[in-house]
Structure formats: structure tokens, C-alpha cells
Image (tube, rainbow, N blue to C red; front, side):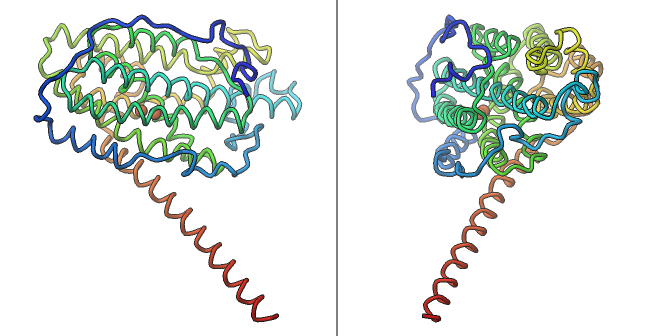
Length: 368
Ligand SMILES: [Fe+2]
Ligand SMILES: [Fe+2]
């Protein structure tokens, strides 16, 4: 079904052209790749998977509660508007929230694909180009999967959030080759990864759990790449150049914290914008969620060497500074283990089913 038939409010234009700046670069040295980058490239090739086969699309999803979201997690809960909603309205609200969330994931994955392709083009060294080519494919598969989930299981899509779009645009328009990494791989992907993780670990619905666990398995490589490439590069930059990057990070973090809350969902339910923003700000559940959203960004930023005074102060203001000490390597290896464990459990369950069928067939045979 055409997406334009299921958008809550369709975008004005079916395409969004972002003018490209900066150079495409060839590298004529084919034989001096860095071992760690080449190992990541190899891993990228080895770990490709097909969402059409690995994910059990036959699993049913209730479009009105795709994630098993508790009432308290909805920003309207406990407000005067909540009291007025019928059960049917509340179910619809849940569907809209899930649709908004997964739609932002979907648009973000398309952005990640385009940024990864941009990196293939602009990064100077061939080893990084090779790796980024595998990531481009990863992101294409992710976009395909989120798109399928939204079309087939929720039946409703939201357009890209204005602020996410402007951050993506800034990231892509910048001619410095490291900016797509920083904006996309560190900020946007860091935020997305934290959101994926919270849903993966809290949902009791098997299909979204599979999707998120498998997507996160790939994202662990993407974060590793961003860290590796930027850590090397930022060691060579002047203080002034580093401060510019830090300003970009500070602005991006505030923007994502304050402006990516799904206020547009509440507006669709007749809540005026100012009130909608207020509710999203003050819901206790969302406040915890917002803080956790930084669990992947803060340690990564610290790790790549953007840890000046102003940035630290901004994180103190947001109440997330201490997240800088969390262990990213551990988080990422856990992401990979969770996906592998899920595979093992599903395989074991299928095996049990198969054995039961065979046993049953034998018993039937013995009876006749
Ligand atoms: Fe992705
Ligand atoms: Fe990614």
C-alpha cells in the first residue's frame, strides 16, 4: 500500500532534496588498510542477514497496542484529557504513539543509509569506504524492516519530526567529512540505539522485540566504527576545531532532548501545542526515559575526545554527566549477545515443536 495513503498527515513533497557539498574522494592505495577497520569490514560482511527471513512476520501484532505500553507511559495519563478519553480513544492514542516512534526510527534509518553512503564517498581512506559500504547495506535493511512493520502491522505512519529533519539536514550539508559521522553515528544513532534498547528490554511483544534485538546487533558495529574513526581524527584537530564540534554536539543534544517528544501526536488528539509540550516535560516516566536516551551518546562523546568544559557543563545541566562513565564496550557486547540468545531460544522452540510433531506422527502410526 502506498505510504502516502497511510500517513497521518502526508509530507508536502514526496522527496526531500539536500544539496551535497564537499568532495568525493578516490584512494589509489589498495593495500594498506588498518587492521581494526578491516576486521570490522569483515564482520560487516559476515553478519549480514535478511529481515524477510530472520524475522517471523507471521507473529500477530495488535495495532492498538503494538508494544504492550502501560497507561502511565503515555504523556496524557492522569491529565484532564485522559479522563475524557474512551477506551477506544486510548487504544488509538497508543497506536499513534507507536506509529510516531517507529516512523522516526524509519526516517532515521533512511538518514543513516544516506549518511553512510555519503561517508563512502567522502572519507579519504579505502578501508573506511569498504566498511561504510557494508553499513549502507545494514541501514537499507533496517529501513526496509521498520517500513514493513509500520505498513503491515500498524497501518499508520507519521512524517519525519521537524527537528530531526533539521538535524539531519545540518549533518548532511556540512562539507567537513567528519560531520556526518558525528551528527549521524554519534548523535542520532546514539539516541536511536538507546530508544531501541529501552523498548527491546521492556516490550512483551515478540515481533517488535525480534526487530529491535536484531537491528541492535548491527548497530553495535556502527558505533564501533564511529568511535574508531573519530577518535583517530580528533587527536589531530586544534582546540578551536574541537570546540566547534562540541558546540554542535551540545546543540544537537538539547534539540533531541527537548524537541523529539511526540508532541505532534498529542496535537492530533486535540491538545494545544503548549499544553502538549508541558505534559511531555512533566511526565515522570518520560523524564526517566529522556535521561536514559543519553546513555549511549555521553560515553561515546567522551571516548572520542570531545570532553571540554562547556560540553561537560551542558551534561551537568541535563543531569546526564555521570553516564559518561558507563561502559560502551560492555553495552555493545550485550546487544550482540541478546540477539544471539534470542536466535538460540527461537531455534530451540522450533526444535521442540518439530520433535513434538514427529512424536505425534509416530504415535498415530502406532495406533493405526
Ligand atoms: Fe540502522
Ligand atoms: Fe546504524
